[in-house]
Length: 499
Image (cartoon, rainbow, N blue to C red):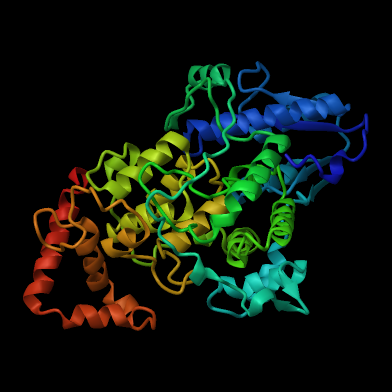
């Protein structure tokens, strides 16, 4: 839904644009109700804009009688009706869609062409060329390439202030009583769409206030969200981007990922405006705030896409640790006595959103320590988050979070005991479990599961330079302590749905 795409630069009466709401796309995974609503509402808003500009458009609503609920079936029907002489489409963001569109085009007897979405700031070939012959793909190398390519926070071909990353300055815990601006929310009545989705039996997860949909669904709203971020949140974004706090679901995050992933606003526009705002306000906004923001979008977001398109479809079946356990049942309700997981999951079910550390170091960390099969982790993340699309989700979850790629994405598994969660949040303060205990009756499950993971995967991890310190710590424990910790871990794993 890139309104600035060259496709729309001129009105051509001989061109028919096509958009559609289909069960094929709502049903391949159980999605959060807000995600389905947001996509449908954004599509309908964009369709109205195109029509108002004078473009010819065929829009299949979910309940239209001629909607066959399949992208390719609808297209085949329409091409025959219109006696089309050629067919063009934009490169799909997901491998799944690209595959069935390629097969569809092969079946046609008219010329076809696939074109760029003109949205991203890099091409998969650039990623492939940069890492050609490499066994691991380090994000920092890609990030430096992208900074130089787009001349962002660069002076004389070198990074501003002498370093590429100021990540070390971006790991602060949120101090008590820190004033946090209320998040900018939009208020839209989506009750008709809720009924439509319900009446058609679309399976969803999570909740929504049907008369108060809060997410941006147009370029104008996305721009408002960006403006608000720059003026109110950027000043502390980097410092507290990893922080977590009870009853604080957005803190200083921009929450622009959904709008960007729907192409309501371009990453170039987001970065450019944020950088310009920092330049004007350098006396009040430290450099590490803007560098951390740029790194997330220009670095990490584009890096995930490059990794996705160079590694699919094999990436989707990687399972380095051969984990087989199911996802705990409370991942669908948040009903667990572990405050960190309860907070993060309930927040996700309520808002269809959690920031990257909640995803990586709380829910993802626990799933990895619990030996959950990566397929189940992928499906949960893909469904529950409003900004989750496979091109950016699966590389983050199966790669970064679950280390199922064996180190292709990250240099070590992102695991921790309770100490990290306590360091970055106030979740542990009033938790049922004791953050300091490993084997007591109320010992935090993260502690014994952490050491259980370390012990279980020694053969695959002990030679990893970034893991040697933890194996040294484990090996210094006496045999009785080790045995007690491992026994506690097995008890927790055996009753994981009761934690």
